[in-house]
Length: 284
Image (cartoon, rainbow, N blue to C red; front, side, top):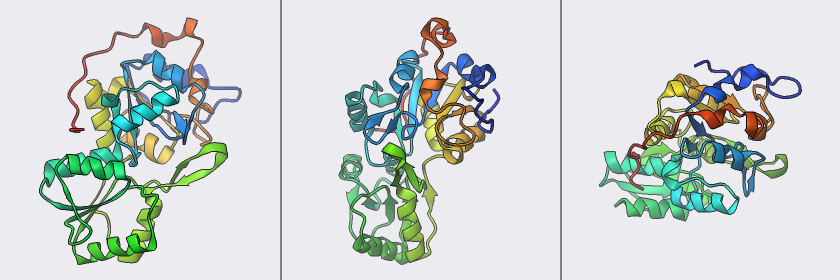
């Protein structure tokens, strides 16, 4: 299937050729921030897109502040129905990956209380010093003292795992929200230590887990996102088509609402029934 992430939005709306991959798609992998929501607002067309592809989509997000269970509840309050078993998050997946590969490691989690609780639930002993791994996620309480603690743990020999390298994500009214990549820039400057692993998009792990939980194949799956550097680039690595929405020059529509033809003529309603889901990699 052709990847169309580099095409330019057609004047007056997307052309039929732009939307051909969506009409042919059996499954969708959907970005979250900037595609389905902006902070605490659902984006126009998001609820209808999820409804039309019910049972045939997974959300794959660089979000590192929530767990899938918590995010599903938050989305429901915004009118978006997404079961937690079809939500793949960079923060949660990073913890699960470490739990499988290094279950007894001393772990420092720089992130939200929700992510710290998830790490404890998977058996980690969280530490403030003498860590073997430092997991850097989006931490709204990040401070000069926290930066110093992280830098010194890395200089002492701890390995740095980063949930994602996004500098920002879209907020309401055209504003930007600083993301984990902004914190990573400070950590790199203070320590000079490069990450041992970055989990989030455009790296393949989130996409692969999304495909796995759907029982989907890359050739029949379309990625919908708003970021050429993460969504489109990551999709291309696995040979998946990508439709971009939003303000990027490559976007084919301003929002996911522009991808949806009238229900009476929508080809997506005639697609085959959902296949059985496969087991999730994450234990959460």
